[in-house]
Image 1 (cartoon, rainbow, N blue to C red):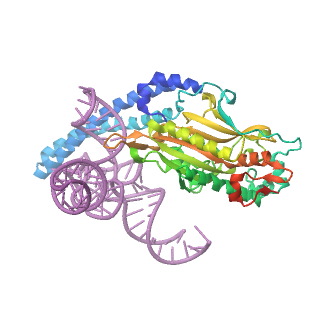
Image 2 (image 1 turned 120 degrees about the vertical axis):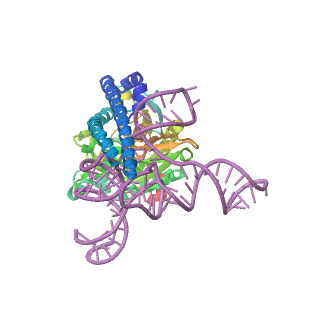
Image 3 (image 1 turned 135 degrees about the vertical axis):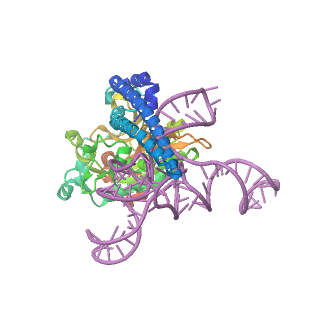
Length: 424
RNA sequence: GGAGAGAUGGCAGAGUGGUCGAAUGCGGCGGUCUCGAAAACCGUUGUUCGCCUUCCGGCGAACCGGGGGUUCGAAUCCCCCUCUCUCCGCCA
């Protein structure tokens, strides 16, 4: 969420920037300004009266002590009317505050200057590509056939146990999954990230902190009896570690990496293009999260992009990096790079990572701030995260691109983790 | 799941109706001393909102788990909720 001070000071600038995200903010901004003005006016008056009230109360205290009962009673008389007036004002203040907050959370994050305008995936800008697109024989199979052929991932069994979109990984399929997780975590460690293993259910406060709540509750599985949410991404628990925390500037950047299963209801988003591993209700992902100094958060973003790129390159997958246009970017992001790998038999690009700088949009919700050494003032940190990486589509691409007559060739970097070179 | 105890500043821990944003200790920061360090000593030490201020800052309000109530006045009294700990039960 944007800060109220920015809205007050740079209303027109915000309005202009949000056009890049195709968002017309004018009406909301005007409403916010007027609510904020009213709120401040009321608070100023209420504070003054409360101050007067406190002064009189203290006076009564000392009068009582001195035994001047009559004077104390007289002073009490004065408070009755004041008390009523304060109550009237503070009764207005609470709904006003809520209304103000409700309006502010409607505003998306401002896109970074480098974000191009645009409406959808076609307007994204390709910043880099790498690897070689494999030429597969006509007989090449899509991954949903390969997993059956080698009996490594079982969707039907998942349906029996849970439902659609909850696959069972078996034998070398399970080992490949585990190998990828370990590989990604180890690479994260080498890049200076601390490994963490967070809970995969979170409470409401955490859901709000990273922006899943209040709007996207339909996308999360909810455990009603305890009011917990199954995480849609490790971003939620890992970023919320720093909720309500004041850091010192010299601790930044903080880098965490974690593996978790991720759960997404994906309500209403099923169709032909999401066959097999392309979209699941439960999947594995390794996530990198950075808490950065505002002056250096784009250096962090650059570093994260290189890290993710390195992972894909080491796996030998053809990829491209897209800088998302305003219209394709998420509500909360200031700048996002999507990583896509080429899936040889499906003959299409699959998104495997989304790496973003949220600047202070999340930290304002999280109340994650930092202080410069010797400085009294707190400032909001910048938060960033990226998938490094999401597994199912990586698996799909490996299976499809690496299929040979002898089976599926495991990428070399993974062999020490899998213990086998071919899935056959 | 049953019974009991508790939740106070970065941490530990006082405080049971008035001058308490809160003793004291530890930690942190600054200083004295020292070649330097340690020790000792001195000083300082939270957050949020509002108003004023060119900076430094000043003033006011709120915050003692969360919400509500009683009162001129609440960390302190009352109600509700959440969480934690101990014992028992169950259990990887």
